[in-house]
Each structure stands twice: as structure tokens, then as C-alpha cells.
Image (tube, rainbow, N blue to C red):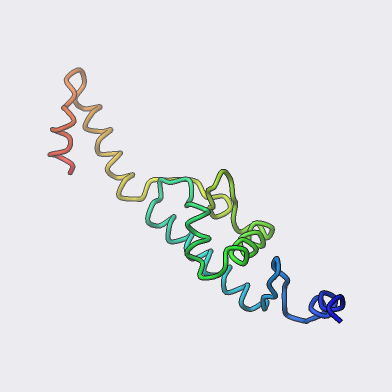
Length: 130
């Protein structure tokens, strides 16, 4: 009987209902792993960004949008990711300079401090420091 299908499907071990889909827990976990990898790659490639596009992560997760959204929701509930304003990031992620950027910042600050009242131009700093 068709009215018994939801209760039968709900009793399947190792499966989660995602909208109208029945998704195996291992498959949902795999999507979550891909989502985390995408977020981590974005943080590594763009450490000054507050996060990455939520829509972009959903599109590249390799699963239907509702399955990707369910995986993201689980990661948020587990405290592994945060979502705000269309941006997803690792929980606690803060944009930060890379070591190379920090080193350059320190060299530039030192050069400007040493210059006193006659600071170098932007083009001179660029020629000196790349």
C-alpha cells in the first residue's frame, strides 16, 4: 500500500531521508567529506577571504543540491562549519595573512618607519619588495 511506504523507508538502517530522496549514510558522509575538502581548499587558496561561496560549494559537492545542503547542515550542527550570509567556512575561521604576507608586511612597515618624513612611493616599494 502506498501510504505505508514512508514508514517502511523510515525504518531502513543506514539511510537518511533527504527531501524526497533516500540517501545512504555512507554516501551522505562522503558528500560531507567533499564539502569539508572544498572549504579547506578555499581557505588555503584565499586566506584573506572570510569563507567561500555556499552556492559554489553546493554546486561542486558532487551530489544533488538537497543532499549537499543536508551534508552542510550536519557539519554545521556538529560545529565543524559555519554558514552566514551565503558564505561557508570552517568553524572559527578568521581571515589571516600567510607567513609570506606577514613577512612582507613587516618589511614594508620597517621601511616606512625608517623613511621618516620622506616615505617612499608605492612604485618604489613595489620595485623594492615585489
